[in-house]
Figure 1 (tube, rainbow, N blue to C red):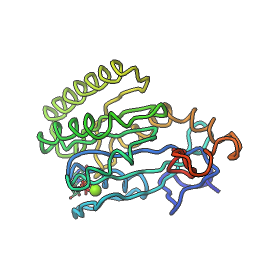
Figure 2: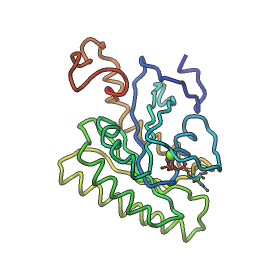
Figure 3: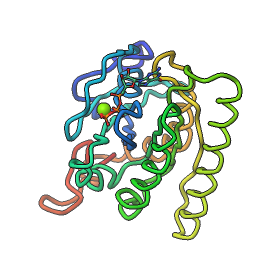
Figure 4: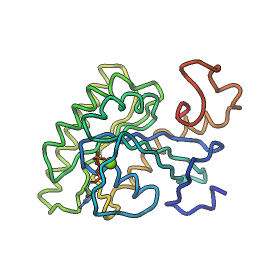
Length: 227
Ligand SMILES: Nc1nc2c(ncn2[C@@H]2O[C@H](COP(=O)(O)OP(=O)(O)OP(=O)(O)O)[C@@H](O)[C@H]2O)c(=O)[nH]1
Ligand SMILES: [Mg+2]
């Protein structure tokens, strides 16, 4: 079923038989996290702003080198009152997407604060990629794009250094995206699958009775725990 699905297909609960990659989106209020998730899962974009309350989940599939992957998209809220949920959602994810809004420079610091405070202490050995995303680049001229690229490069280096200091092996890459036009979004997913796909495929190949943690353990079972 999954291999024949179009690139932007989504399903209500994901496919547990497929290699699954948990992708968590974190960033400031209105940075475009939900818009990116909707772009990935349904290929559409909405101008109207509807703030995320607490947390949303979406699923999508992508095919890379003949292998279909299920992407579990965890869409966090940028509202401060929901920040306490982020550590739980980040824990165990294979891909962390940090999003800022190129039309609002304050969102860069917000993004980094959230990484340091809410994400970094929770990152597991499953983490394969941290993506630093400058979103809404459709609003930029050439000079603005160059500035966004410089900002992203600087934050990538900063996060690389932090992960290195913490002896974490995850890759860090920057992307200029537009949820509105779709620019950069598939490049982000391709990189996510390149970095996280092999381990996800390996985990999916192991019979569930061997991989699932014992009942009642902190590991749990199901896609949320397995990533
Ligand atoms: N021009 C443009 N607008 C965008 C883009 N991405 C999102 N927006 C707009 O920015 C606003 C906020 O987008 P959301 O995706 O809801 O932002 P969010 O990060 O999910 O916000 P919270 O859930 O409140 O944290 C909406 O009005 C979107 O239409 C983009 O790439 N380009
Ligand atoms: Mg949202």
